[in-house]
Image (cartoon, rainbow, N blue to C red; front, top):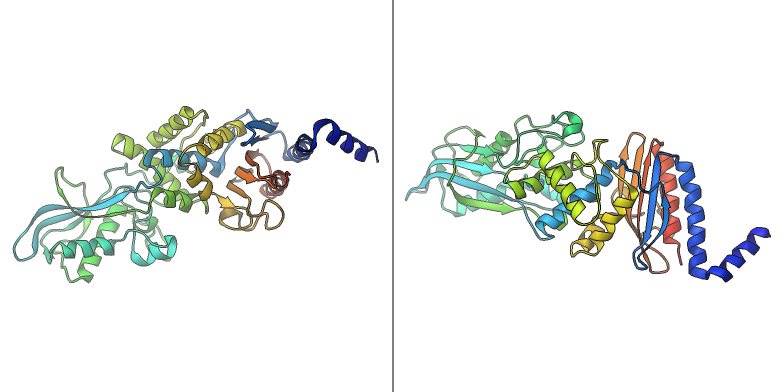
Length: 407
């Protein structure tokens, strides 16, 4: 009875909207206490331009895959939503009147994470640039035979196969990185092993595609940097950056994130490295009013940190930019797709909360946007460290449901 009287008094004194937000703060405070002292949260009403909840919101926490929010934001800003990454065939030699290419071909990678075979790209991404397309273009250019070799060139990025968390070696959660990646570094389309030499592997696949079109290659394929000044004989482009970011964020794809970090540096500096990409991502973040400590693109490193307040500052800044809708659309939808397909399958959050998950052992994060029943849009960040992941998921889902239930 006492609680009902107090609730009625709150409605009279504060008004329905303020009373509802007071109830929200009470609920969220209870959930965050259960999350422990190593967790933080921040919730912001975008339409009203005011914070509605903060809990240890200023202290940086391990982000896990919430790092991808910073990577994808910087990539969209750098390349634009329609920007693409190209893979080209360069010619060292000349084509004679008999259709013979007297010289070698260089397959030069441009950091496209979707490049591969026709069957793999169709099955994995719904389509993308392929070696078969390049072989067809070379055939149409009149090449009927090649006297040299096909070389793979990955020189637009460094040859380190992983990020700092794996000592820059191949990581099972990422796969081998290369500016000339073919089928995301898998040695078989079934994904039973990784390639040991990605540029040579990709060159061999182009060699096979040319042979399949009746264009014999005299020498064996290999890996080598192309000489300067060669002409482009054929090229294919990746899907637009809007699609690449979606392919990264919804399933939380570490390979795409690490490739994009290098791609950002490649676009700015002419050569991509993880460290340079991380620095550029951090620099972009500062320019739009947020901040992040970042050493890779995916969040596999525990050194990737930001406070919930700063994550929400990123989300707010991106929402006001022309790339904002693309970032919003790239996030998993509660109860419907991506890494949230099995979470919040009922309740007001289902279909109305778009968020990026993040998971490491004893780390769980959820940040994004919730469209409330009131029609208001809330940006939120829940960064939980030193907690069991199942408990974190339950608390995060309850918080998102409470936000989405606001009237």
